[in-house]
Length: 451
Image (cartoon, rainbow, N blue to C red; front, side, top):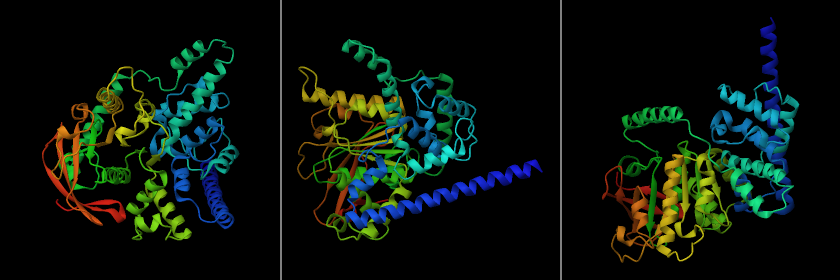
């Protein structure tokens, strides 16, 4: 009898929670309609950027609270606790809650909205949902909030310091990016688990990261632990191909970060929507405002729901150090492009040495964090012929450090341009083979012609 009452109570609470979420969604729709009525057309770039990264709107100041919410929201589905390196003492307000989270995680118990927390009441959960539901927090943002929590802790510790040198040393010693010691037994277990998954994929005809392009899946075989360079002349479709692959990887349950360093944020989101929408809406229509606001809202909603594992960031300045700080939270990192990375040049360092140091840092990232990095790079002029490895611009180290080098070459100009992709280098597979794709510019996507 007592068990039945407990089940009835749990079911009632779950239904109540669902009703609260639905009310919150309806209120968000009402707020959006009122905003549109008052302000007119919504800036697609700002709106989608806000949903995907949360960095273009006012960020919540209570980083501890928002991290707690993010873990409750995403832990069961994305296992965000695995990459978090915070200590209990880093927290000021939610120490006991974080300690409880760590205990639940260590015991392998589920952390979600239905978990009976000792340190968070049901009313507090409802308050968190009221505050943060719909502001666009993604799993990819968790490292950012972790970093801010550690920064707050450091700020509290150095308040009494009078020497700026001591402050800087303390920051360097205790900053969040310090890596934790690796458990060799866990590494071995992870290797055998990944090897089993790899065998299952090979049995299906491919291994590595599935993209849906048979040439990439069975010929090139993109995989974690690889630095993949996509090289070509300006305007030949490097950025579009990189975005197309990022979208396909995210659709196949990979956590993807697209670092947009070359295009404007509006341009990259319009390309993403043109690539993924099911309504035959072209890039031209999105570019020149030919889509009404109701359809734009529908496109944004469909995109966010379907590509929840994709994080698009438009940083003003990005270095390999910045990428290293967040790499542990992603399976695939796409960088558009090499020349836009802002690593400082050292004294008496040549441009070739500078780019060589960048590619070595990227190679270190893929090895240390077991992720794939797709890097767009320019080539020197190669005329009308397919370029080769000697045409890679500014650095021979690109060829040396890359596991895979893919060249892209257009055959002719037009709305739908045929391009040839050539795998010029493949450290773990076959090199020298080519494939023909149609570069559908109006939809910002690539269609494989030879399979």
